[in-house]
Amino acid sequence: MRRPKPINADLPETPEEEPSKPEPAGDVDEGQPLLLSSPPSRRQPKPLTPKLLALLALLAVGLIVAAILGGTGGGGEDTTSTASPPVAASGGDSGTGSEDLGYPAFATSNTTRIGGSDAAEIAAAAALTAYPSTTAAQRPALVTLVAEEDWAGAIAAAVLMAEPVRAPLLVSGPGEVPGPTGEALAALAPTGEKRIAGASVVAVGAALAPGDLAAESIPAGNGAEEAAAIAALRDRAFGTPPRHVVIAPLSRPQLAMPAAAWAARSGDPVLFAEAGKLPKATERALRRYKDIPAYVLGPSSAISPGVLSRIGKLSGKVRRIAGKDPVANALAFARYGDASFGWDVNDPGHGFVLARDTEPLVAGAVAALSGSGTWGPLLLTDSPTKLPAELRDYFLDVKPGYTDNPTRAFYNHVWVVGDEEAIDVNQQAEVNELAELAKIGGGE
Image 1: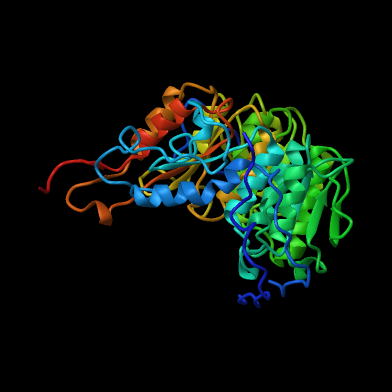
Image 2 (image 1 turned 180 degrees about the vertical axis):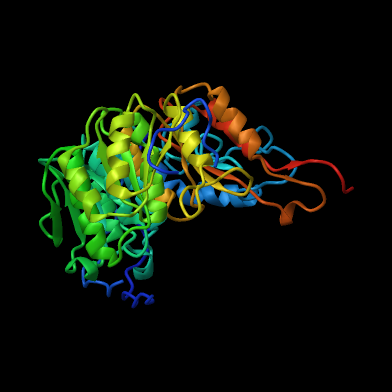
């Protein structure tokens, strides 16, 4: 299928506008679920070539279709099986494959797919979704680049998507910049972040930054070292210490994935621990964050009670958020609330991001969707074709409803991440049905 240009490729060049200024330490019983701008640069954005992901170009089509069909909430009817799917603007050969359709494989009344066959394509799609970049005011000041295999750096770097920096993440390589990344960078045209010496990109570890952009570098190291360096950069750029710290398991990447969405939402840095010990880089960072509450993500098999106790001695307060597997762990984080920490999403009216549990780097790649727009937690599915039963139950728990007036109801919206090999259209359609606004009695 040929890749058409994204939505800002054919806009005439216009003069850039001035952007507007803007419980105590110890383990828990894991058997119990925890519910508890800088001025723009003179660099003009370049039109994107057709090589960028076709689904980027379909974003406008899909969102218009979604708006026509009822936006993110919809009415009492499920439109998935009744609306005529528009043909994608790819100009590709006709056929019956759902990849050629803007609807329902790309968008339904309550879901929108951020497609791509690899993390670089997905990250480019997510970044341009958060920043359409059709005007100077829609461009980020800063973009973060991570290497293709650096999942820990990607999850930790998600914190830079939080206010006040708001840097989306793209995927680079040690020797070259992938096509989708280069094209997305040209469209985003980052203006330079004055809080980081005017840098337009932050290159994490082995990630290669284009030579024509001012770059801040995070030295290559293991996951714990890079995360600690990113946390220090976060402190310098934000100008304030964090309110909380998240400790994620370094040996279990799938369990660490939900931390990226929260970091982008909250500005809380992500540090890493091994199953049986606390890395020295993490310990040094926690000493700097003395008396700031720490939240450990994952069960004791991923971060042991002894490590949790050590964290508690450094931070003064530590809590564990845990699920038995990646799906349950992500759900535990989505449900969890402790004062100012946690999503506490236990009712309708929210955004969600749904991804496969097989690609931990993708968690960082799509973190911009949790730090903008519908601001929702990252949920995980462990199958390309079947929604896990506990995830289905959760969607039912937060399913929106109305009695008299659907236009005054709360709505849910779900971003579906990846191509159909990751999450197929049947699973997407089931999610759409679960997110659909339903009449629950009363009224006419």
